Image (cartoon, rainbow, N blue to C red):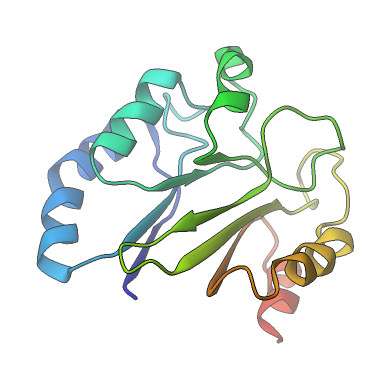
Length: 164
């Protein structure tokens, strides 16, 4: 499997880069699945429905978010109906949207995408380490790959996820 992860797409310049480069990159590199962080895609803060659909049309399969998820209030109108838009899983229970999803790859295999947001210099969120184990356990035998996007400001909070 060839997976491409794109970090923060920031505003119009970031979206323009995706438009110019992504379709060609997918074709040339035979990319199977594209995950992109879109939390800053609308002018550096949040995302809109139009931008979400444009990114999907350009070849992005899943959009993850972060601490700017709610900066564009219109997200509340569509986040529940778009399963490929993943907000941080460590928002409190009852928060609109979903924090993870399982998606099909072109070869029929499955990939789970889980999104978390760190807590240092961020909103007051639940500890990401409290739920990741439960989710991984529930995915056993149901997916071939698991991709975790941990959006954070502090490197020392990201290192435990990779076993360092």
